[in-house]
Image (cartoon, rainbow, N blue to C red):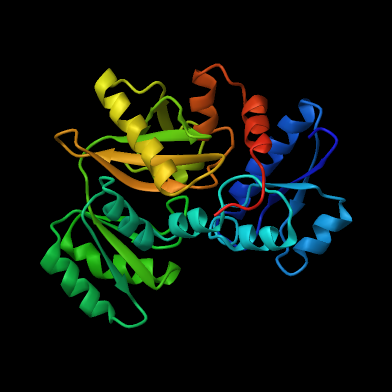
Amino acid sequence: MKDKQVVVLMGGPSKEADVSRRTASAIADALVSLGYQAKTLELNPTTLLADIAAMNGDVVFNAIHGKYGEDGALQGLLEMAEIPYTGSGVMTHAVGMNKKISKAVFKGAGIPTAMSESYNGNVQSEQDIIDHIHTNFSFPVVLKPATQGSSIGVTIVKEEAQLADSVKEALKYDPILVVEQFLNGREFTVSVLNGKALPVIEIRPHSGEYDYASKYTAGATDYLVPAPINDDMTAQMQHIGKSVFQELQASGVIRVDIMTDDKDNLYVLEYNTVPGMTATSLVPKAAKETGMEFPQLCEEILLSAGIGKL
């Protein structure tokens, strides 16, 4: 593989483009430190294949967060062009990017997830959505645009007076809205690398909410690894993480976010098919706990690259 030109793809049109660029730069530097030929490439969707060819690219390391990188579009294009790429295939990405569909898959596969409903702002009025939430949920509730990542557009609505404005704001990001019953517990994440669950991390944001600022501001959140939980709970979370990896036929690395309620029951929030790889990112923290430094993590993900994925 060290004789191949690795193209680390970054940027793109999503609101996570800046995070993607930081991820890609870190990955490229790490691979170069191990002797790989790796260069970053800003995603221009209309010229991507030509841009890869101009760089004599042999394999793509996908560092695109959000649109195209995590919705299956990039994977489909690379499959047709027969260019090997890192991470999961079209189906895994498409399901993971859409919180409405991933919720349905979790329920069908028996993977525990919080009570939720989805709404379509294209065919339902804001007032109908608000009325249905009032009838079927108790406050607080969590509003999530179906196809955004990095907690973009996510709102915890703590009281009825906030609901109308919160629904209006969430629908700006996506016409499909997923509403979850709020879980008043602790937040964890399990990274799964090539089917193996890494140590569980507990996430404790200083603000009390793991939002965009908490994720990408250094020092804004405490990450406890390994999580201060008993062996049974650790094993349960790792089993859930591996189940998501297997059921969704993932490849490379994914990150499975889990929340507890006040009785320590476990619920999957979502899974991330292109987890961040920045200084504050969680997959590198979990890998380091096993003795795997960041360059070796990047190498292992790179060596899993291929085509013909689902």
